[in-house]
Length: 339
Image (cartoon, rainbow, N blue to C red; front, side, top):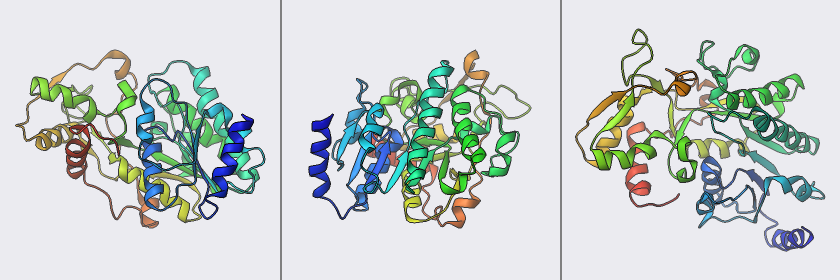
């Protein structure tokens, strides 16, 4: 570790004019997009904190500029003595598997680790931006308003959402929410999600099936009094927009919890039709039963209340669902390219 620190010190001297931004989960889906955005803004003095296993996640870092990559367990040792050098944290590292059943693991990885990192950042007055999740809203019975006063009324449907919710609640209990930025990402999709397996977006998972079967299979509605088959709605947001909004918070002093979505609820049928259109194919959609485990925690409807980010001027450049699918399919998936 000592030699690792010495290599870092050499790199630091070469880029003193840059902000030093620590990005946890930096090789992941949204994290690698954030690094791309930071690079495009002239920031390359970035520490990537991530665990590069054997899932190919490292490919998301190719052609990106950063200082070094360290495992998540080493971050606090790395930070020792860097109090005056770090400018900001973008904390995106977490287990995001909504079907993960190991509650103890999620508490340690998503909740306690986040507390420890936030405590360090706030102790030394560093900008701290972190990923909460729209999963904290559960079925949305209380709406999808990013209102800190209503946090205690939310009912997450799975342990992943609850682990994120607990961190939001901890910050509120400690009167720290106005000193940080919590981002509740809605249904993010786009390039750099190849490593996510079953948690990758529907677009990525459906593409090979469409190419082979010439049709898309969507889940039937669980309650036809609420919506017809394929008419379940989601707030789908392109990863390029999610990454841009995340980085925009480095340029202001806003604090609190903010929804990161489009404010538009689109149906799964619309998503499927967009994929067919991008491929130049005639739509063919059939409907299948939903697996039981998924049905117990399924959201029929999500739509972000984007009033807060709209006031900050962050919604003006949103990519439409049709444009986003077209860009993702033609410029990334079909060409097997990362962003």
